[in-house]
Length: 300
Image (cartoon, rainbow, N blue to C red; front, side, top):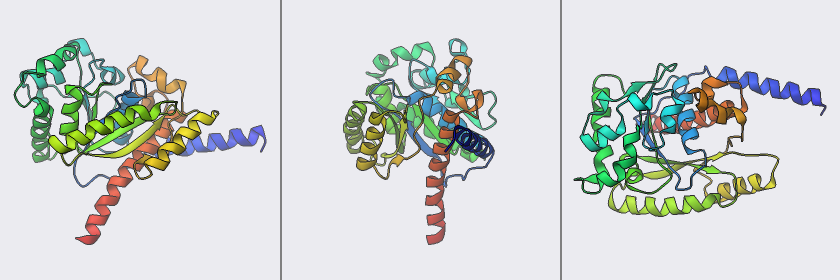
């Protein structure tokens, strides 16, 4: 194949990818609540959370993102002024209803977010003596989702972006969710963080939330030029064939640049390989949820 053939093929894939940005996605039967977690830092956790949320929203689905990471990177990616925004800290510590702190994300008619302001850094310590400390997020979220559903404004997806640790904030997220989504970096030691998370998840299932399950694994920072990336992908596929979404997110400059402009890559450069990959992953997540709907309809 010549260089021209390769460039034409790449261009054709880009056109198809951009066109698919406008295609509607199938809605789940009920709200799907994902905790996006990995005990290991720097694996593309927040990047994955915000871009999947944006992609699903672009597919016509109503999405809520809760920024539970004190670093507040998800809030930054959505262009939220963290310094002047009440957020999840007020919900967890001061019992402020979520309806009072939720914000519309600019440029996305169906996407809303609850920010992480600087006060959240102290929440881990303040939660220690709190009554029902592991269920603070679950209680507030269920109250909010129920009120929205009763008003005919149901959310299809909720993504909770966690800090890179297994402290009380992450425990709150695991207690509040039905599903866990784990981004795994295609590099050495990538499965190390996952093994620690699985141990914590097992304890949460036993003691706090028996319904939570690891359902989704996304490969991030994939460099097809390296043998290591392919080996990691094969290893993950071998151990988690049902959970893995086999659409790796490439290591791409555009994905890294977007947050510095207060954007996700989905709006910063919708034609970039990173945006197209995240759209593909979002569609697969939606289709898996949709498959469950169709199965239930057929057996009803």
